[in-house]
Image (tube, rainbow, N blue to C red; front, side, top):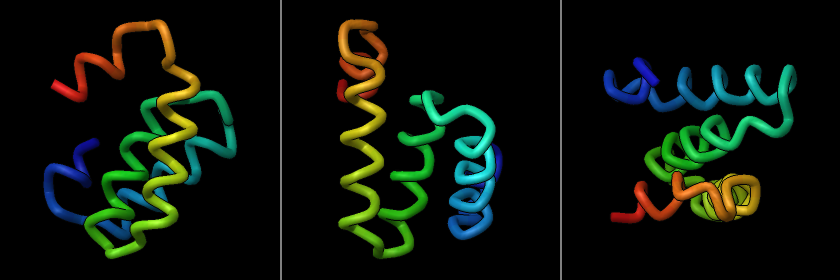
Length: 68
């Protein structure tokens, strides 16, 4: 998350991808990687990450809180 706050989009994407290697069900990593990819102009990949993250979080309230 720190790299996202620093605007280090490529590094944030790489960090999240590494986290997902270790835990493919880590919903927040999908959301954060989606955010980084959106900033990098990788809109299709970002949308896919957001969809997977939302599916993993469905019913938890986390997605509703993030959407505002």
